[in-house]
Length: 147
Image (cartoon, rainbow, N blue to C red; front, side, top):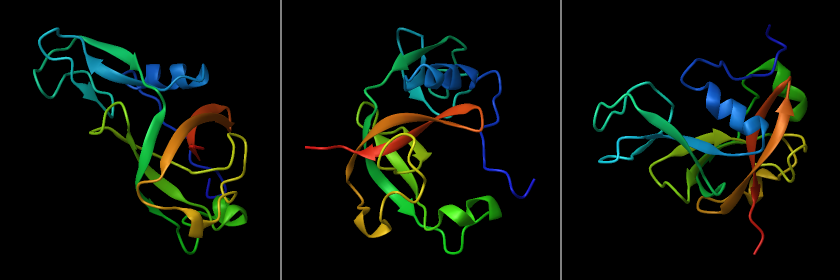
């Protein structure tokens, strides 16, 4: 298993996130209580703000900014060695600044993880979600937003 890429573990609460991703949509779970409406990630059964068990999935624009990043040296897992140097970024969503997602910055959806020169990554850079199939699962990745 040391040669396998990391893939998501899907549970009942998070399954809709991956189903929407497979359709090319970035959606975030939200409280469906009309007096609350707070977005939450990671998905969970109960709203941490009002304790409601009612939820819905809201479509996001897919825009955000790089909040943080790392370029692991050496690669953390053997399966990623051929793609080094690669990045892992934390994206703050434009639609929901308290929501942050982890992913990779690439030049296009199906590009290898090392397709962006690490020297070009900047905190605050604007990014856009794109979707790629990785070992049978569609995952969000990020590309730099072009002006």
